[in-house]
Length: 568
Image 1 (cartoon, rainbow, N blue to C red):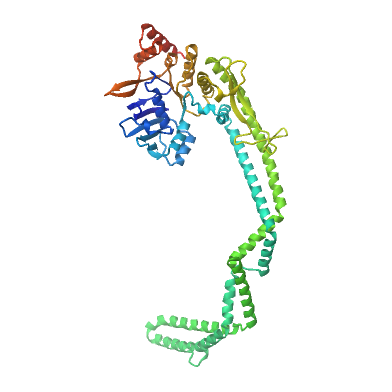
Image 2 (tube, rainbow, N blue to C red):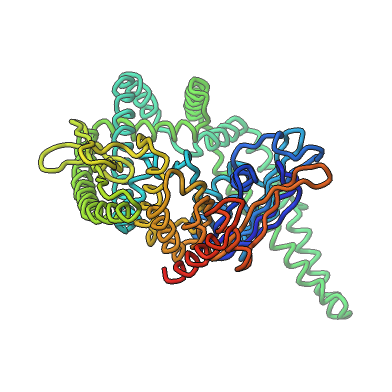
């Protein structure tokens, strides 16, 4: 619910704070007192466009702040979480407008954009002015309203999921055909490249192995000379390292017999002898295995040159060439399997279209059943609101399309985001008139009552917790006004309702009655709002009945209206 509204330095308002209650709040006041200013302030804090002309003369900044309670929903929480705005038990919307034209927006004291403020406002509050019935007058919202009434959430979700799957299958098919077409166009080039790469029989790491082997073959003589010299130094010469260390070990062992301090060096010397012996054996074996093979060296150099040339040609390393070869193999294989892959995807698309058609038909049937109930309910509401001969039609149509995804009874239809239905509300308020779109209904009084009838019919399913009606009583009076008041009262049991009225029959239904007054303070015009107690409320209603001169009869009539409202 809208808990409070704070306004400072906005138009004729210097500063005021209004607290609201659940149920029905009625706002009254003389023409020009500033009732429309309140609606303007609410619009501003709900993200509508702002003008610096609205800042009170002599002030640098206007502030409007709305505090709402118990309004959180999954949709609102998702919106705020995406904007990294903390959610609490209260939701605070604030708009600041400077005289220079700059505007700042806040949600829960976190800076926001006007667009985000507007999105949050549309979730929270449905504000209807005489010519601003945007939600009900736009046909693109009618299907959602019908779905709310029909409770088709599960069916709509299933349809959307099936449609998304079908779209993904189409996307895969387009991608597959595009790739295949590219392969076909470049078939000769791809075949040449693939044959060239396959002919080389490339292997990962081959270039490094070739380089290492070439290095060894090119230096075979040097390696043999060095290893032979090392072997001679270690083992074969008269005073080899091995024989010297063996003699040293013998002396250490003798010394240890006399002085135990040499014991710890015996193993070290033995280890040195073993290391030298192992190195000498490895060197002899290495020398024996050295390959003097000029033919092998020429072959490796030729192989190395081929790899270098093709690497330069493609601008790739050896591993990159192997990856390219694998990619080309895959592409050529794809063309070979194209027909099979396309057939498989087309079969899946056919099955998915069938499933989508079944879901669309089920959803449409549920909507059609609900539309008949909705038509009767709204016609009943309109009759109670003084339009007894109204004809209300929920028009559900379909677009035939030879390429459509939906097939019903052998005919193809376009598949839309939420089914294959096109839904629009039509109305005729006079006998003999053809039902027309709501937006073409000319009478302001009829529009207000149609709006109220719609809201009453959709009240239990509507997700909008707060409804605000500006000039709901346009063009009505007497018995119709009483019926409108009763309808608002009943609707307020499901939603918080705030309504501006000039009619005593509607004002008498209020649970909270706010009066807007304009006065002169310090030679400045100021608009103020006050909550009325029982006595002042009777005075205000009597004023709506008889004007400025309040008589005892108008007071009695006001009391009767208030008393009668208690039984609604």
